[in-house]
Image (cartoon, rainbow, N blue to C red; front, side, top):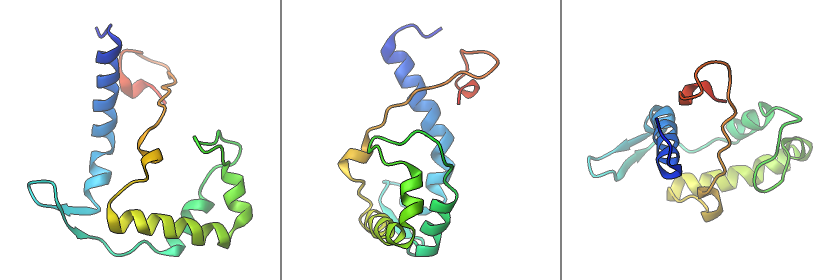
Length: 120
């Protein structure tokens, strides 16, 4: 059993990294030293528009306190701004500093609460 806060934090970090590892790797080609050698094609505005359209309403906003509904109201203006931001991140492979930190609040589902996969 994990009892120390740092051990628990590390376990959640490992679980999350493993969970998203395949998604991250399918868009990049890396050398063995981790250097990106090939990026897939540019992000398209229609992809950003689709992503915004697929956001659920009435959900908690992120650290910026901007609800998804605002992006939907702004429509094409939001698409243009977000596309520009996403494209910059894609080209430079550099996340904005404020995006590198997140608050992770696991919410238990039914089942064994000692298993990370039993949380939302």
